[in-house]
Length: 319
Image (cartoon, rainbow, N blue to C red):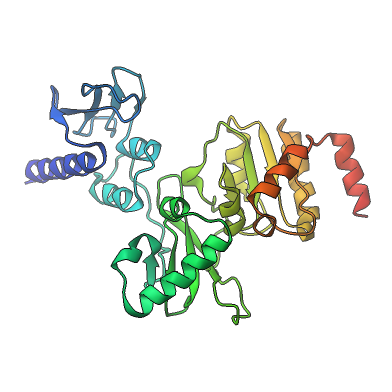
């Protein structure tokens, strides 16, 4: 029975992988070969081991460009596979494999509707979707942004008349979401669930080898559209600090709101002590979302690396 179940699991896993990579062909040792999505070689050069090995891995390797990894989840992450594909992957992974993770209890509101489905809506949902899209367009958030970040809305419920922006961890699993009303008569602009202590916002989209920008909110992050992490507040969590310090990232831009200057300076001091090149981005009394993408880039380009002497001067100014 166990052998039969394992065979069924492998077939389902292959079907899922083919839905992302395209049709594969069988090779030796229970492997499958696909056209490589990285080098696009005309022949199926990317080989993946469908059967989990003794090390609890499913290694993959392109014999043309040498892209490789040890797990299907690492391949899906490199390809920025859709969230529902990643969720399906974790439902198939054999317990005990290195790809297995604990699924966060957090879920999107049950009333959540993805704005990628606007063509399938009618009635009140279609009307609310138009309001949500208009709100996003006014903030220069594009259709590509909507698709990339799985942005949606709620027409009713606890988060009614609000844009909903999810955050996903490094595995592509939901770890938080933020909402913002698109109605001018709603006094409470933002309404979010409680944030866990060690959430890394938008971790799924982060490249840990290039300059990194830290902002307070997810709508600030949407404005910037670069390698950016929303802190969901003013604090760099212990987990995020460890990740930054242990990464290849050298340049870090801290762009918090003006009322968080003291917190920003504290973060700068800590990152400087770890040998990082730190930039304190001052936003003229507004947040990144209010400033807009173009003006934010201008400020970034004019910001100089923070030295310890400049840091001391900033601290004195706050006294």
